[in-house]
Length: 210
Ligand code: AMP
Image (tube, rainbow, N blue to C red; front, side, top):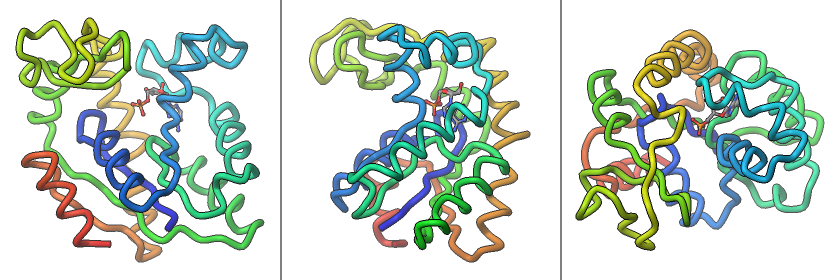
């Protein structure tokens, strides 16, 4: 199964991507996670990406395409994949289609998790990341608002979850990524999912639709 997951920052894309990829036993490819890891390890790629990621701008298409190309050419892509955070604009989507065509593969589904802007802003304002296990959580889910419900690690606000950066990320999403909804809808593989409700409810909706 080859899936692309779309949705605004805070729509629950990452959480659902993890669950769905585990369910189908396919690799979960999060370009955001890959970039954050490279930044943390201060690699050449990480140093190049750092200022873009922290200010909520998209990194260059070349950079992400390189990441995806390496993945596609590796063995782990053979049984399918779930892309989370890629493609992020039309140029990336077209390049991705070309790459897949070259190896005679097609996407099966594009899942668009739909959540309205006021809910997104609310969720992102409560979003915290664990310093230890990197799990994203909401202060509403943490018993004391300071430690990770999963591993007890200290929670922090990621630079790109700060208020001013959130507004910019949403603008970037509307301008760059939203046009992909129409693009994939034209190819008949788009599935719209209502992203409101509990994590489990949203997972159920996705699974039913596949
Ligand atoms: P995410 O965790 O998916 O919200 O990604 C965090 C940040 O990583 C984004 O705000 C971008 O700076 C960068 N990023 C992730 N995926 C891409 C992509 N496909 N194209 C460009 N930048 C990306």
